[in-house]
Amino acid sequence: MRKIPLLILTLLLSCTLVWQGCADDAVSLRDLRCENLENPLAIDNVNPHFSWKLEGRRSSYQQAYEIQVGTDSLRLSQGNADLWDSGRTVSRASVMVPYQGGRLKSRELCYWRVRVEDDKGRNSAWSPVQRFAIGVLEEEGDTLRGDFISMPGGEASSPLLRKSFTAEGNGKTFLHVNSLGYHEAYVNGMKADASVLSPGVSQLDKRSLIVTYDVTPLLKPGKNELLLWLGKGWYKSTTFKAEHNGPAVRAELSALQTDGRWKTLLATDSTWSACESGYHDTGTWNALRFGGERIDARRLPAGLAKEDLDKIPSWTAAAKVAVRARKASPQMSEPNKIQEVLVPQSITALGDSTWLVDLGKVITGWFGLRLRGLPAGHEVVASYSDYMRPDSTVEEQGEKDCYIASGKGDDLFCNKFHHHAFRYVRLSHLPEQPEEEDVKGYLIHGDYRPAASFICSDADLNALHDMVNYTLRCLTFSGYMVDCPHLERTGYGGDGNSSTQVFQTMYDAVPTYLNWLHAWEDVIHPDGSLPYVAPAGGGGGGPYWCSFIIQAPWRTYLNYGDSRLLERGYDSMKKWLDYVDRYMEDGLLQPWPDTPDRMWFLGD
Image (cartoon, rainbow, N blue to C red):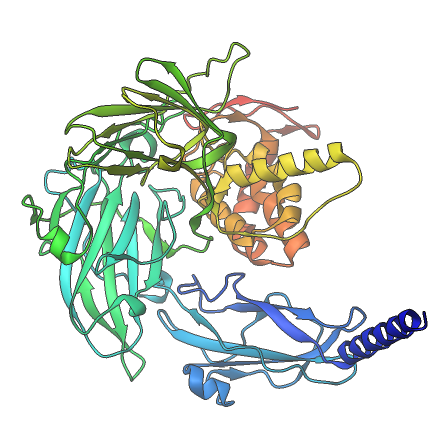
């Protein structure tokens, strides 16, 4: 009988000793960020900011920090900070601490680390060495090397562009891709990273985004193969007055030399090879007309390695594309990634060769389907819907994909340069019911991280929270938030204002708002007039919609301590308020006129 109290006493003593040991430890550091991004490969300025979080005793706090920045990771880990050593700096600041070292320049690759001193005067260990690089900055007099290229004739919807090159040494090798439309990048048949639907959105007639990849691990000694796969996406005459009837891309592959300079290994020009891929975009991407993809497996490459690409007989010389001047800037928002893979909850026969797939919940993303043993040229149509009527019929929303079989056995189809908002998929012209393992749904959104959680004893409140949380995930991708991902995909300022506080509480998403506010600054007119939507303009609204250009930066500062949006957008804010002031009478705002890119003055 006396063993139980003794055991309890032993456990309590052990827990006390463990707790006291933790209490005596100094703080440690986690979640290190530069410009609110983790190890970014291309930031859009030469004056970065650093952030970190503390772990340790609940009552402990930081009373000083030391930041070191250098050009070599090994030397920095040994204390050689050749760019900046802040020294012991008395401050509790740990969010967006500004760099104050030697002047940085476009394309510079840098490393940094930080340690802090807690309230007891004890230093934490140095953080692991982190990386950041300055992107290709036009304002620093730098430009991306290479021509815009595409398929000759300008009619390709989703071309493949390839070029061989020789790798030199073992230095860092970065690929910068500036595409008008979507792109995917492959080196030696391997995808450059896990991102999808790249780049994020921008006001494409004013600004294009440069996405940078570290392809060093994908290289091999000697000959290598670079492939760029393009898709039209938003780059259309119906949306952004595209001057070329197909996607175009400019890209540069550069290797870091021992003297710190970058040597161009490859840049896009007319010596590249081009061919059609088998993907075809079918929508105008105007509201209610997003269409889908027509995917012809008879024209898809068997693989993306050089030996597979060499088997394609239809390669031709790529063509240079003349495009209007537009600002090109590094993408500063998180990339889109596949966040969840769903399997069907049910597959139901609707009639002869027609099946209804139910994924169990609505997603924004892709649909994948394996077709087994169909003859060459056989077409299967997938129609998408997010709503089922009470009579068990699904509501059409005008989005569908067409899958054309290769006739070579099994075909694996999946969206690539399009996406849908759906729960239900009606498969037509499919002779046999698909197996559950042959059907997938892929939830896609920006790779932002959760910042808060909520749970309580009330199941209804929990369900309400979870519904809002999941809905916002489905609406926020590609560096902005949409009103509805299936019908308009439009970045309304009113919707943004009404959801900013909630979304920024739930998620760590400064980069999303930074990208979105770039679009708002790009759509402002010289007289200060604003549309109600960015990018692209259009829609109905009023001052509450336009005021997103002021309210979002302010809330971002309050919620995250990030002042960049206020600093960068201040002139645009003043310009818009000057415009508003012209329509004020006796302290009341009067309706301003409709314009080609806005309608309906809603003054509620």
